[in-house]
Image (tube, rainbow, N blue to C red):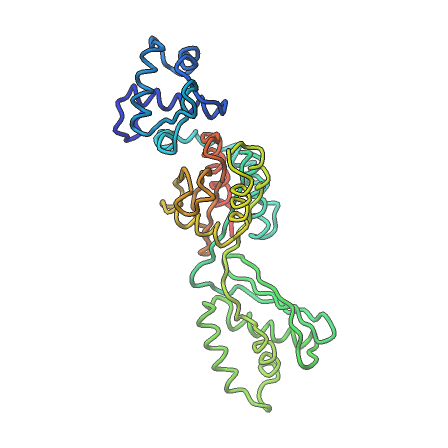
Length: 349
């Protein structure tokens, strides 16, 4: 095992065995337990006394804690850091990627795929599945659709090249027929499809400022929609999280108030985006693992984050992640993130 720690190889191996045993049972790990599991943990020919001596050194160095004098040892956040660095991603199963890709393909929009990804991650890991899509900094218009809803209400739909869809209903000051809306739609799609939105808005504003009462009727009606916000929306990331209730089943050894603080923090989409941005900075396609999120928020100290960033055609980027307790099955979570991330990025935008 080569993980880049400063620990001797045998000490490293014993520490990782302790972490594995603790993840499986949730109980403090004693040297006698490791001896009994010697063959399974790869600790052949090591006596309980030898293991106990190593564990004492690890405790002195801050890798293990002892809740009670007569109890075994519990790995600290420092120990989990060593453990996760030594994980080798499982070989990606192309058949499984194909199955996930098929499930995601059934979703008709990027927004639906985001929800489906979070659902799959929750099912595969038992943790909290998170998917966030970050639109391109310079979004490009694909097309607009305008639908007359009656009573001077118009549904305005904007689709960008990264396949994100925005829509909102506006109330106009005067009636506009569906034929007029179709003319406006055709005008915008014909003249501005493929334009960067910021440049499109400047050019459209310039043309509208030149329009007069005697000018083209299409532009005059377009003024009504432009003043109501057509093509003037703010680009916002989409975040979907599923499975927060799964955290209730884990013993965080927290007071009820601390547990409330944890769930309160996870309800904030802005906070989730901050976590993803801060702790998943590795290049696209590489899995990142952050053990303990306490430096971002003390109420999240008992959680770990495993995620991957993926780039998609059209400029859209996404972060696929699993949030769970520090005592989670990291191999399973890493595998799930890799498979879902690879399937998500392989879909056409």
